View 1 (tube, rainbow, N blue to C red):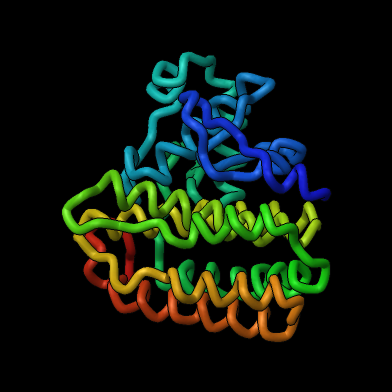
View 2: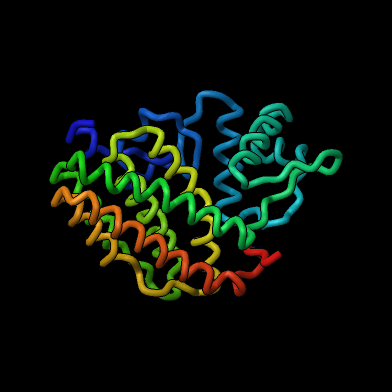
Length: 256
């Protein structure tokens, strides 16, 4: 990836520009908040995934294939295909002869997410530091690191979460490894769902600005070992915070 590709941006479906490097557009768009899909199945998948992540459909909620087809203006076949993919993403459960159910976020799922994040994001930070980054890319990531979540201002918290996703995807992009980028995107689907739920209980502890800037400093200095260690510490601190509030996330996290 050259410095030019690191400096461009990708527009969201609603026309608003989001701080996600354009390099993402060269990868298969399977997710989260984006993508101009080439097939109806892709469009249904992207829209339903977004609705689950943003809490339009609550954990454990049953979903009717017919109602989903009406909501997303599609036949049942694209809905069925999207449901299979979302089950693979651990966002939906398909129960034979009963239908679809939005996946619960259990404590086991939380632990799995953080183990997965530690494996892939520490590797991404290490590779990013080893391979180096342009000044422009680092500047953009520094700006993302400074995003704020203001008390009693849901929109600012949503913007912070989106900036946090863009930051972590940006680190993966600096690693120049498409498999790592896709892995981070998958993890962020779950993280956004958790973080958006935290807004509803008016919880956001100390924001990770300092941790993010320290990671960028290590990448800038080409210190791969330190970048990996700082990313691991950052992820573990996030895990401690999330597990600390898991029991008070209403209808979002199941302790069973």
